[in-house]
Image 1 (tube, rainbow, N blue to C red):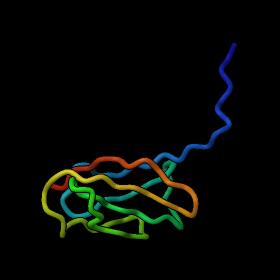
Image 2: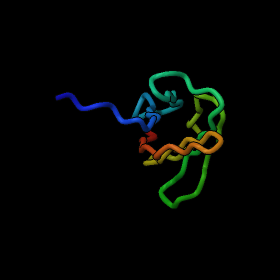
Image 3: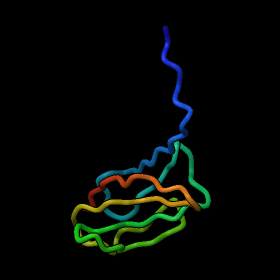
Length: 85
């Protein structure tokens, strides 16, 4: 007996390259996201960058670990960690 797929649709947030020095590229469900807002949060929980584009310049950030979140209307994706070198 096969398991049936879940009826709940779950978007998958991914970024590359990770670690990165200058820019990160964002995909949701392996596609370029349209209409999403992205929030980069530092280790203190402060939003350091808010962006609406799928390519984000992170060259202004200090080296270290950050978390990026995505939101669109009533959808909110779990954050993923990335490293700025």
